[in-house]
Length: 254
Image (cartoon, rainbow, N blue to C red; front, side, top):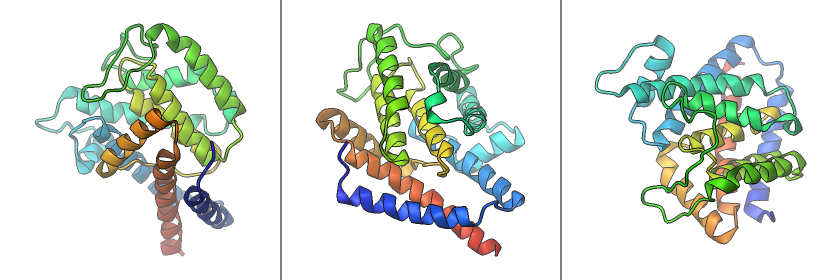
C-alpha cells in the first residue's frame, strides 16, 4: 500500500507522541488502571453502538462495572457489553506475544467470546452460509472460500512490513472484508486491530459511534477502489486521539 502524505504526517506525529509517552514509563499503576478501565468502557460502548446496541455510555459502564441490568434493554445488549469487556481482557493477555505468533485459533477465540451466550452455535466458527448486509450492495466471499482466504490473510499478517498502525488498519479491513463469521465480524475485526496496536505499544484505536457513517463509507470505498488511505486515516486519527488522552492524563498527574 502506498500511503499519501497526510497519512505519513499523522503517523510521524503519533510516533513523536509515542516517544514522549514512552519516556514516562513505567507509568504510575493507579493511573494505568484508571485509564485502562476508562478505555475499556468507552471502547466497548462505541464498538457495540456501531453495530446497533442501544446502551448509552453510562449504561454500558453500569452493566460492566456494577453488574446491574438496564430497564428496557434486551438481554443481548447486556451480553454484548459483558462479552466485549471479556474480549478486551483476552486480547490484553496476548499483548506480550508478537504479531507473527497470532494464530487463527486466536481470532476464533476472540469471536467466540464476542458471541458467547448470544449465539453459541456460531461462536468461534467460520460461517458455512453466504451472507449479505442489509442496506449494503457488498457481496462477501462465498462461504466455501472462507477457510482459504483466512489462510492467505494469516500469511499476509505474519509477513507484513508496513508501519504497525497501517498493518493494524489493514488487518481490520481485510478480515471484515472476508466476513468470516455469521455475526460479530465488525467487533472481531476491531478487536484484532487493537490487539496489533497493543502489541506494538500503541493505545486502542476507538472508532467513535458518531463517526460511524464516515467509517463505513471508508470501508466501502476501500472495497470498491482497493484504496485504503481513507480508512487508514480514520484509524490513525483514532490512535492519535487515544495517545493524546494518555499524554494529557500524565500531564495532569505531574
